[in-house]
Image 1 (tube, chains in turn red, green):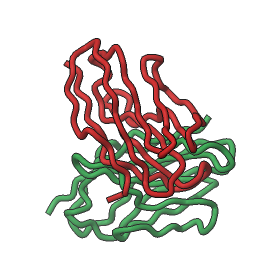
Image 2: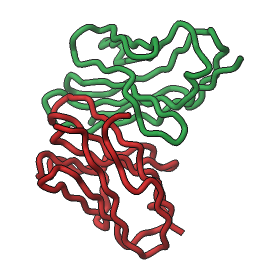
Image 3: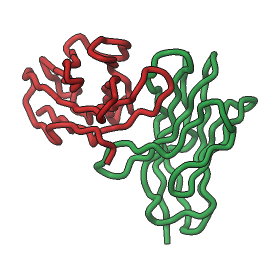
Length: 113
Length: 114
């Protein structure tokens, strides 16, 4: 158990819908990262937050957004969903920004029908 | 730009045989390098990481990796495979002195046969 929790574990929804994925980092970790794992693209970095502020952006679509709240949990919002958004979404956390180990949650499997 | 190449999307070994999973990286600055393992229907678990200290890094479950700057490689090895090692393995790189996003290789699926 990494100490990072993600909910829900599975999510099945239809095209055009909007969903919210939630992540709670390890106790004391200030950084939260979101990654997408798909058969086509592999594991890709989406976005990083550090202590409530956006720090780095990767291959995140404009239909996707995220935020980190004062209690340090984070939410990833996916809207106008397409079939191609079906993937495993991971959250990771670390205690600092640079070079520290990222601990991954169990992931949320999103299926868009 | 950083990148990671894992040679061999599938590797199959016999139980008790040497495990060698290959990873080459590209980075213009000194990197941090990681190996993660993913078991079916689970998240990623850190096996080991290189952060510019010793070039030979020992990790969990008997795995180790050697950082070779001249070859830009960070191959993962284990002297004797166990059935429980069957999983997908990911090599990843991030920049020292920069933000922490991980760039992953495509992964290598390890199968262990009795």
